[in-house]
Image 1 (cartoon, helix red, strand yellow):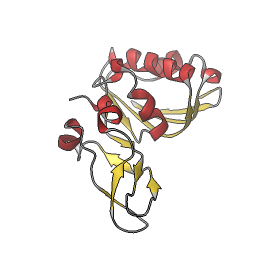
Image 2 (cartoon, rainbow, N blue to C red):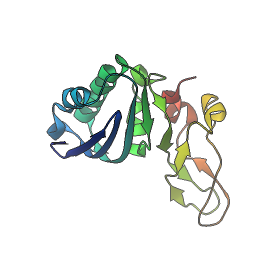
Image 3 (cartoon, one colour):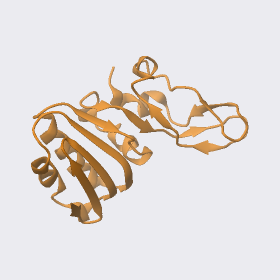
Length: 158
């Protein structure tokens, strides 16, 4: 389904989002909730390229709808959406996060990256607000999370 500049593919209880979560995607929460079966849902967000405040408001509405019917697990959350989700206490611990991109910087060479973090494998560290170690692709040194862990990882819950 295409809603504005947001493309949503649905197969069974799985959904893949790509494009923009913005005012042009008005009404997508109701459409997606109606298209997904009741029960647990898996959503892959790797293709989300842009999020603004209106898109975020609608995103929260979709999560509310789906949580009433089952567990929601999010995969490959882009850094831009992850940063916004961390600002909303309502989403902290409200969904399961399987994987997400995070901003990292190398203190040795200054390289920046947004690696995909496996939230399940790294769960014990993430729940303690500790970012996993990521090697720099440029120099091999250990990169560091470029955000305060308490701010960027709070959506993961404790």
